[in-house]
Length: 416
Image 1 (tube, rainbow, N blue to C red):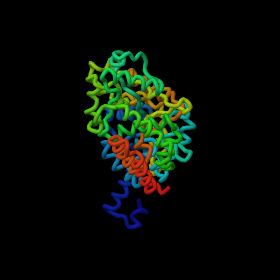
Image 2 (image 1 turned 180 degrees about the vertical axis):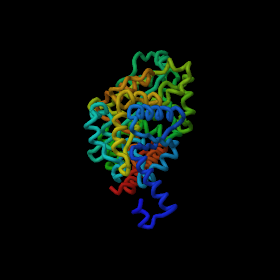
Image 3 (image 1 turned 90 degrees about the vertical axis):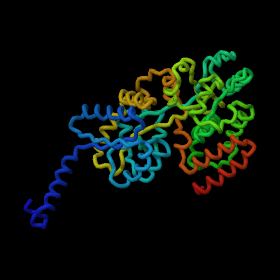
Image 4 (image 1 turned 90 degrees about the horizontal axis):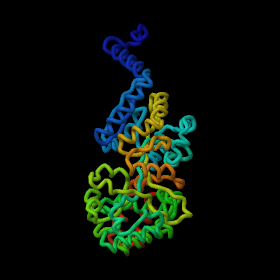
C-alpha cells in the first residue's frame, strides 16, 4: 500500500486500483461463457447444463451470458478479437474453420486425445478439424433424410422404403399414377434446394469431392458437377416435385404432406415438432437412397459445437467444462432440450421414433458428415450458389449458362 502511495496513487485513484486488484482475484476462478440460443427451452437446457457443472465443480464460479442467435452471429467476431469469454458455442465446418485459420479458436486436439472423443465423436471429427487439428467440441446435430407418408405409400402399393435410386424412381412413378405428387420442396427458401444439391452430390461424387467443391477447389463447369445437376434435371423433367415449388417456403409447403397431396420431403429432423398430432403416426423417415454403391455413404448432419477462444482468460476451467459437457449423458440432455440429436455416439438414443432413425443413420455413417451447403462454404459463394439453384429450378434448360456463371463467381471469390 505504501509503495502505491509513493508512486502517486492516492485517494480515489488508490481506491480504484484496490478495486481492480480485488476484482481480478475474485475472477481468477470464474468461468465465463457466451451462449447463443433460440427460444426459452434452449436457454433452459443450457442453464441446466451449467448448473450441473457448477454442482460437480463447486470451486469454479460460472458466469453465463445468453444472447439471441441472430444477435450472437453479429457479436461473435468482436468477442473473439477483443475481450473473449472462456467458452462460446458455434457451428462446425467452414464456420469453425473461418475462426480457426485466423488463430481465434484454441486447438482442442489434446482434449480429443485425452477424453476419448476420437471414438465417441468419430462421425463428427472431420467437420471439427481444420488443418489436421480439432478446434471444436461437438454437442448436437440433426439428421437430414426423406420424410414420407406411410399411408400414401401403402395406398399405391409401395411395400418398403426405397433404398436404391431405381427403387425411389419406381416409387415416384406409382405415386404419380395415383395423382399424388411424389416430393414436396420449398424452393422459395433457397436452402431447401441446397439440401437436394448436397445429397445428389454426396451420393454421386462422395464427401471428399463435395468438400473440395465447397472449398472452391473444383470448377463448377467440371463434368462431375454437371452430372449432379443432370440427375436433378431428370427429376424435374419427370415431374417428381410439386408444381411451382419456387412459390412455397417451408411453412407453406408442409401442408402438402399433411393433406396427402405430396408423399415425401427431403428435410432435417428439426421439423418434427411442427407435425400435427393426427398426422404424426403416419409420418416415416428414411435415408436418402443410394445412387452409386461404390461411393461411401455420407450424410448432411449440421453440427453445433463448443469452443475455447484463443484470447480466453480461464482456459484451464474451460477445458474442464468441455470434458464435462462432452459426456454421453450431457450430450443426450442437451439434444433433448435443443430439439436435436446427441453428437456423442455413446449417448442414449432419443425416444422420438424419427429422431431415433436419424441418430442411427448419422452415428453409423462411414462416408463422413457434411455440414450443409451454406455451412460448408463461404457465405458469398453459398448465396450465389443457392440463387443459381433457384434459377435452375425455374428453367433447367439454362443449366450450362448457370454453371458458367457460378464458375466465374468461384474464380472471383476464391481466386483459384
